[in-house]
Image (cartoon, rainbow, N blue to C red; front, side):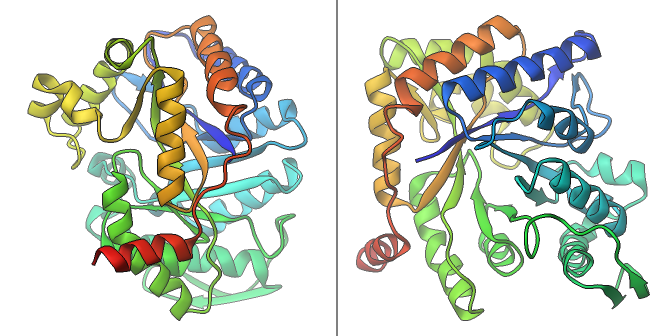
Length: 349
């Protein structure tokens, strides 16, 4: 089992220089702790929190990268980008990283990001489909002609190819059947989002496998995002997690994330998080991960090491602890095959 981190936002009260320094400290601490994937998401004009833009940031972080570590985006807000610009920037980033880029891409969930850029939010899924189609052509063909609903390209030469052949792997997140089918068709893997329970994922695995197999596409292990907090026991871990994460969960609820109701987060935080956050002693957390891996074909497991209010020292200490007590002890853990998961799902049905 490989592990990775999601490097996120920082309160705007901290300086941009402090923010970058924190990112560099995260990279150093994560690599020392044994994490093999370093990823970051994307937002625009985000009230209260600063998201450094991922492509230039990852270009800087690539200089600090160990040879066996990959960089990725989880996720880019794809539909607000022009496919030619995004394809060339990502191909350049793949060159800079020596072919170790993972392209996580999705639609985002904030209408304001679309409205500000003059992009229709209601058409985000159609835009994403065509965006990936055009970028794939730009990465794999010498000359590109494309006549679509949103973009037209006529016999254009391509001049920046990614190092990876035929292109960097594409990770697509999804929560519901339509999104899972899209991830199966257009991406290389379906990224399981942090709020999805194992039972919910098992219900969607059959759909994902049917779509992939029907299209003659290979089945690759599925990246899984989870929040994780170690304590002396479950109650201690919950208290530790609430101390750092509650503000962020409330911010998500305020922004209208479908999975997080404002009332549930504010009045029932423990019940809101207990089904999808890895909580407890180190033994508890390892057992929880092993149980998930026994049911689902997952890998890597991506966690968030930093929450608002944590400084660089606290983040480094968290990564060291998780590395010593979770990442390294579970290095030899194998997750379930798709065949095993499918047999369980079919048997349960």
